Length: 153
Image (cartoon, rainbow, N blue to C red; front, side):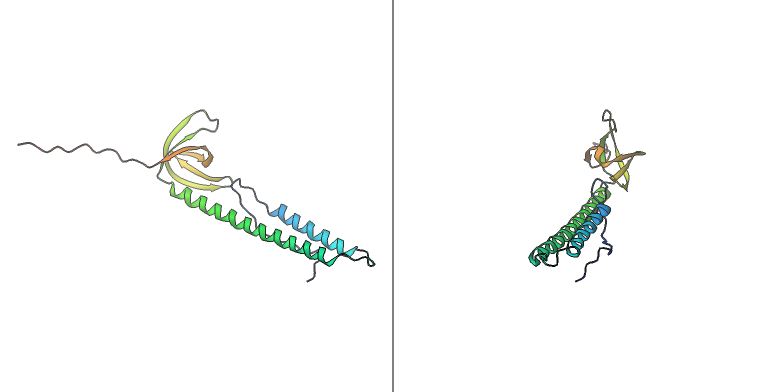
């Protein structure tokens, strides 16, 4: 196995509920780790070489880090999918929400949902409401039908 300091390290972005991505930071961290490990091998003292056990331990740590990042990416994707399905299922639901300043409470029915960087944004009676502003969710109740009377004879 040959490791070069000039090899690019690739990855996939992870979307978190906050909408941030970790691609550049993770990629830079992996690249820095590889560069440090290659520099350590390149500039080691030939009369006192690095312990092979230490090198294997560093390789194992790097592999474990990559696997943990992969698990984190998959969990983030699963969370995003779950949030999208849940938000889509809320269309037609009666909800109450609070304004951005937190002072006024409103009620309405969700007519649509869009998915922005910060998560689902609901269309409620012509107003765009982020998920974080919802207070309660309930089902739409049909208008009561008047009781039918039967003529008495």
